[in-house]
Length: 137
Image 1 (cartoon, rainbow, N blue to C red):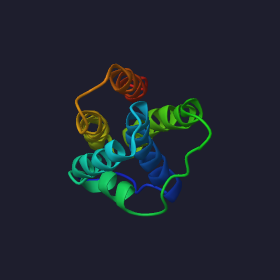
Image 2 (image 1 turned 30 degrees about the vertical axis):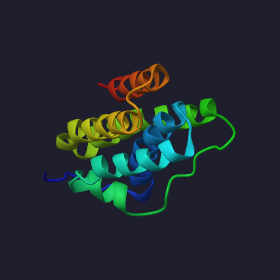
Image 3 (image 1 turned 90 degrees about the vertical axis):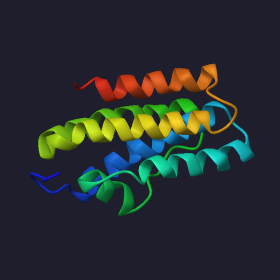
Image 4 (image 1 turned 45 degrees about the horizontal axis):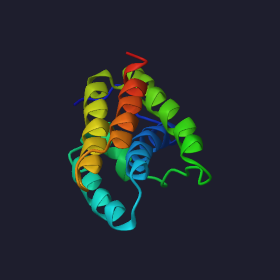
C-alpha cells in the first residue's frame, strides 16, 4: 500500500492503543490467567498479518498505557482510540482503513475463540469494538 503522509508518533500510538486495547477488552471479558496467555498468542497471530503504516504503528514505539482500575475506564480510552485511528488512516492513508478494521476485528475474534469459544460477554465487547470502528465510516 502506498502511503500519503507518514504517521506521527502520537498517531501511531493511537492506532496501537486501539488495536491492543481491543484485544485487552475481549481478553478481560472472560478472565482467567491460562485463557489470557492463550488469547495473547492468538492475537499476536492476527496482528502479524499487518502491513504498511498499520504494521509500523503496531510494531514500533512504546506500548499503550491503559487504565488499570476498571474495564469501563479501559473501554473509555480504547473505543475512542479505535474511532480516531480510522479517522487518522482515512486522512493519511485511506487504503489502509479497511485493513486496520479487519485486523482489529480478526484479533478480537481470535482472542475470543482461543479459550472455549466466544462467550456472550466477549461477543458483546466485539460488537462495541465493531461499532467504534464503524462510527467514523
